[in-house]
Image 1 (cartoon, helix red, strand yellow):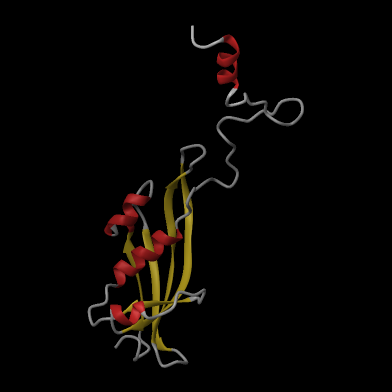
Image 2 (image 1 turned 135 degrees about the vertical axis):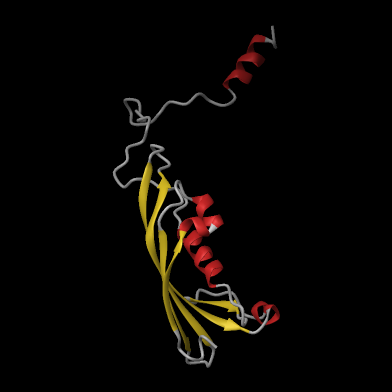
Length: 161
C-alpha cells in the first residue's frame, strides 16, 4: 500500500536500536536518518526509494583510534509477491534491487541492512600513516630469504644434526 499511494516517510533510528549495526561500529551512539518514498515504476512494479545518512563511529584499522565516518546512500527497490518470484529474477547489474513485499514490511531491518552494506571493509583516517613504516633496501625492494634456503642447507650438510 505504501508504494501504490506514493507515501513518504522520514525519521531517525538510533544506532543502538539496530543491534547488528551497533555491533559493527566502535561506539553505537548517534542516529541513522532515513527518508523513503513509495511509487510505481515504468513496469508497474511497486517501488521504494530509500535514502540514509548519518555519522557513525568506526575504528581506524591503521591506528586503532576512533573516527567519524559519514554514511550516505540512496537505493531503489522494487517489490515482488513471494520468495518464489524473487528466485525467478535474474541477477544483474541493475541499480534496483528486488525485495519480497508484505503488509508487515520491516523498514528498520532494511535500514540496518543497507547501513551495514555501506560500511567500509577497512576503515581508515584519510591522513592516517601506517603504524610501522616500511623501509625498502637500497634497491627499492626488500630482500627476502628464499623459502627453501634452510632445506637446501640441510641437504648440503647431510641432514639434521
